[in-house]
Length: 208
Image (tube, rainbow, N blue to C red; front, side):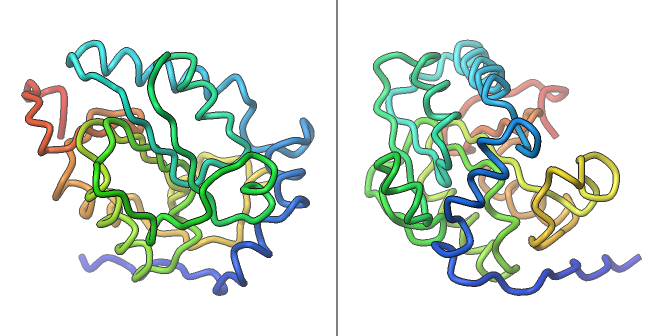
């Protein structure tokens, strides 16, 4: 059966305008409306620490594409002490407040790939063409572990709290992401991927 076309949201306006102080107040700071509590990022960071230890991956350089309010990077800094952490954001507000590098997931470039790349709840704001470009760029920036999450069509319909989740996104099926990620990454679960070029051998039941 042919895959149904992804449901497309209205194209976003200038990202710097969309991701302003009011956006952060609603989805990050307000306990009543925020999508994720800060302590949840620490649990995810600890998960990544466990995967790195399991596969003897040395995490010295960390990149967060869409660093937001910095919750994830601060948690990763605690789990990987001594690692150099770089935060990238399109939001003028977040860059001004937290000191992130102003760039996007499609445009950020570094000649040296990172040991751990994080891209959490970013790609759903891009149309199909831009999202595909972003995934290619993530691949070029990754030489070890990737933590990747994006709101999918299935999650919107079945899993997320729609009152706390931004609906003005492109709701693509999970299959769309998996097909593109598997070219350069091995999925090991819970949002964790290993770059194929890292050469980490995985048992058959550890990946798909």
